[in-house]
Structure formats: structure tokens, C-alpha cells
Length: 202
Image 1 (cartoon, rainbow, N blue to C red):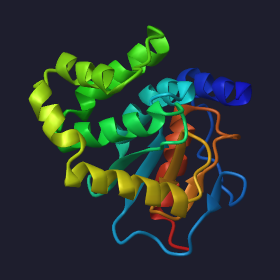
Image 2 (image 1 turned 30 degrees about the vertical axis):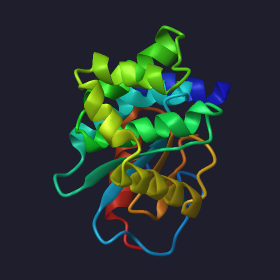
Image 3 (image 1 turned 180 degrees about the horizontal axis):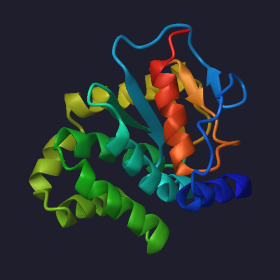
């Protein structure tokens, strides 16, 4: 975990001073499926309870800015962190996505948990976060156990299982390539790797 923290700090501050590196299988990425998704996409697996995901937010924001227009960026919250509140905040992300307030809600959750050390303890606390983000509490109540949100949560779990995600943050490109960050030295190199994998056909 310490190595990952050092990596995240390095990604944020290290300049990209060399030519584009040659990326290699099993060094910079792993093949986790044999076929690509029908359309290009980048999927980030994360948890609000993950401190490294919190540190990774500026990197992912920069990646989103630099992705080609035809590439979808998707986020998949996992349920295996946070004990009993893990599934609850996974469901909260689905609600935020459904109500189109994810960009408002996500920073509040991350700040509460990692900056303020005030992690939500129950659904009432989660509801309060949505109200702080400007969502009517009744809209939250109507969505949180809805068929649509339950279906979204089921899809998150299927994706996590089928791609064998055991740690976060994890980035999967085109549903086939799992990014390995151990040897990456900067944000720019990380983004270059993702773009390389988006273009990869084999």
C-alpha cells in the first residue's frame, strides 16, 4: 500500500521528461479478457473508502479531459471496502449517477471520509450527503431502492467479478486490458499508456 501511495504522489508531481516509452504486456498491462468491448471505453474501479482512490481523483480528472471524444469513461464502485457501508456507498454512487449528480456527490463523500474523517455510518448519513449536494431528500428516497438502481448495482458486481478486480483503484481499457501502474512515473505516462491500450487491437 505504501508503494501505491508513493506512486500516486509521483504521478501527480513527476514531469514527463522522456520520449513515449514502449509499453509491454505483463509489465505495463495485463490481458484479462480475449475480446474488446464493442466501443472504446475506460473503466475505473474505485471505492469512496479507498484512500488511494481519493489521491487518484486529480489523475482521473486529467485523463477524462484528454480522452478522445469517442471514448466512454465509466466508473464502477466496488463493494468490498467499507464493511457493511461498502455496499451502501456503492448503491449511493448508483443513485448519484441516476439522478445525474455524481460530480457533486463524489467530492463530498471523498472529503468526509478522508479529509474530515467522518465516514457515513448509515443510510441517513448518506441521504444527508445528497441533500448537501442539492438533492431533495424525497428524490433520494425514491431512487435508492428502485429497480433501476438495484440493476445498476448488480451490473457493478458483475463487472467486478468478471474482471477479477481485487484492489482499487484499477483501470480497465476496452474491457480487456488492466493497467499496471507499478512502473509508471508520471500522470502523462499513465495517460499515454491508457491511450496506447485504446488503440491496441491484439
